[in-house]
Image (cartoon, rainbow, N blue to C red):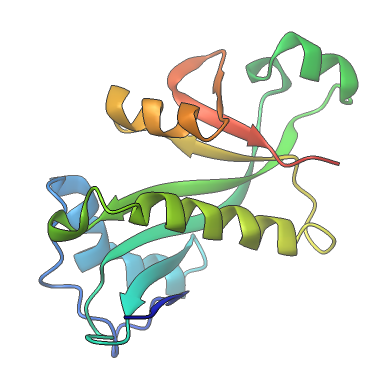
Length: 162
């Protein structure tokens, strides 16, 4: 079985049957993801396989924004100008219930970081920011090197290097 991560296409990807155990994330993919994409609020990327390419195994969203300099660690604050910090934002990350525990979350996160790095020469951003939905999600992000923002214990950031 081969996997692919591609931009959500409403006519190709089956959203109605997606279930991850989180009502908010399920509602987003079923009702809002396509609308947000059309309005350029965020872009949704879906994990699919070649066996059932219409079935969404997981997804994440990306957009750009800014964060307060004071949300970064003191060491990082010293290296940066005294302005809001440009960031890429991963607004959501969800894995279908029957696919959880298989490493798909790490695969999607790795893809998001790669996408962010690929566009840095065109759209400057210092870090990837995520909003963890709960303590378990926060532990997931911590495992991959994210640091907590000082103003919100469930908001995390990953500096993307020089």
